[in-house]
Length: 599
Image (cartoon, rainbow, N blue to C red; front, top):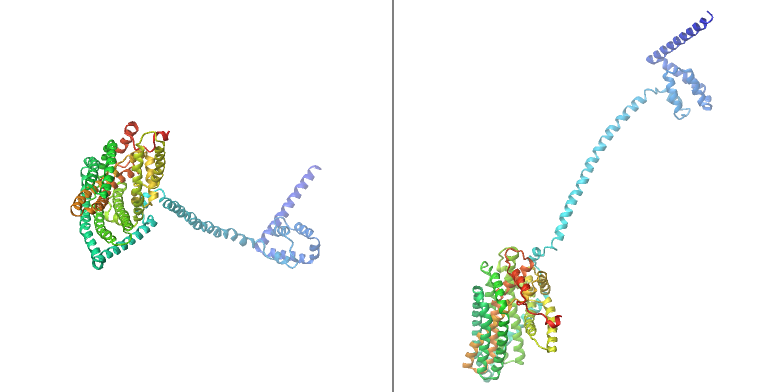
């Protein structure tokens, strides 16, 4: 009984504590539900806090511990007191205010909007940068796309000069153009002045002067005008014949120039005058050299004829290609008619030989410029046909030649005839064999000069001038560089087309000499030598203007082939000839240097 009694006492103690805890919980629950007991207890706590204010200030931690011990653990006031103990200690004036407010109710509305307010704030946050960032990658995209599109057109004109420069509108060789225009104005003024002096001499001079001028007009003017008309007729005849029968005409021109110049020289010697004998000897010497040259170039005639036939194929397709030739020949005939009147007027002026020489040089340069105008016009039309496959307007090409490219024509007219003459001389020197070291030294020097001159000035330049609007020197260098790149130097050096056109002019001049010399010797033999020279000069210049068409066609064929050998308009004529020249040493080009110097 003694052992069981303590056990029973402990069980009763436990039940008593449970009942007290349940009663306390019921009382607290009822206070919380009704709210009255909470307010009463808060008032009690507030009165207690006011009474022990000094103690709280001195011992804040002890007051909180005592309050926590007096409250039930489940009481909300103990929870509020615990939270206030963890918060910073408020001032005495604010402490009862915070404790009197219903703390458990205030955080609920404060914390409820807190997670809701950032939601509308953060929801537009990812949406606002999206329209801002979407244009950001789009704006550089058109810039980056435009960047590679703008750069190619800037760099494209450099590798495609044929497209841009085929329509170049700049003037070439302006200094030469200015000099020619100045010379032309001076020549027109001089011719006008000399014609005026001639008319004045016929009207106001003495009887002896009048008689002399009447004789000049009677025996000079008809023969010169006849020589001009005859030369124009022969010019068209030579051109037409070369275009129709190129194989026959190449042989015929080479040998007829020999016979005609020889016949003209013999005829002048037969007059037994010192002046006519001098002119006759010059013609005979030229005929001998012409014959030797014809024998030497005989192996080249076949290839020259093939190229001439192939290059003349586009001419029938371009019906008005000969109109610039008609125009230049008409202008040349009118200018020569005025020119001969000026020569007649110079007979009664001071320094007659000097004035006549100046008139001859002026006529030579003017006639060469007219020939090169035809050359540039034909070259422009043919180049556009080869490079672009188009049929260009001859009138527009002619207008371009007399305006934009006239300066290059003027510069080339001064140098190309001299260069061609040097070329003929050097070719003759290269054919010499012997032990004369001085002669070979001169040949070596001339060859070096010729190579330098050919690099900076040649007849092939007119194709580049007409096509791309280049200056004369630059066009000469580019044309020769094209030949070097394709290995065509021996071929173009052995071409005899320019020689055939030159000899055609010699043929016309010789025919004019024979006709005018026979006529003048019959009526007034004293003027035979002078009129023979004038007629030869006029016949040569007029024919050279007409023969510019076939020469331009051949030049365009060579240069355009060197620029684009794979063009379907070109056959394998040049390629086959290169193979033959490389394999067969009997067919040699013009020797540029004697073998003793090349070693």
